[in-house]
Length: 121
Image (cartoon, rainbow, N blue to C red; front, side, top):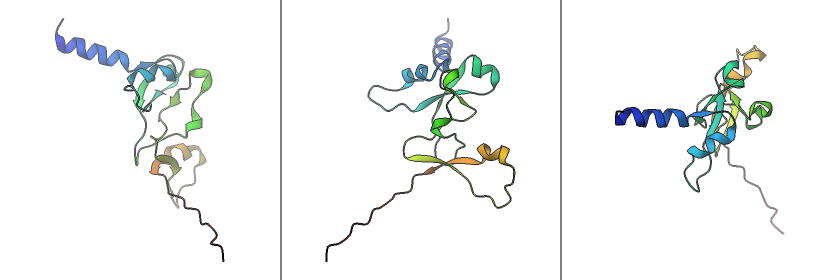
């Protein structure tokens, strides 16, 4: 078998997942998991999903609690954001369709919050 074909087959097989834990093997030793198990449609939700990298800045996303436990903690169509980012709705003044709310979410850098301490007088 051609070496390139072997590499392709090994790589493509590793991208499939039945459960979220199946994507952990793509994470390098000691690194934080940076993949989620995503279903692109209802067939993949019940069968095999794909291990996909967590969403980056500006990419569509799902909130972390959107994983479907019954289906192996798969996400539908989008992964949550990578650490340091949060999934927020984009502001659109003409946005009126609540059914498309999830289509409007994007990863944005988390805002730094500072706490003010009272200075003794």
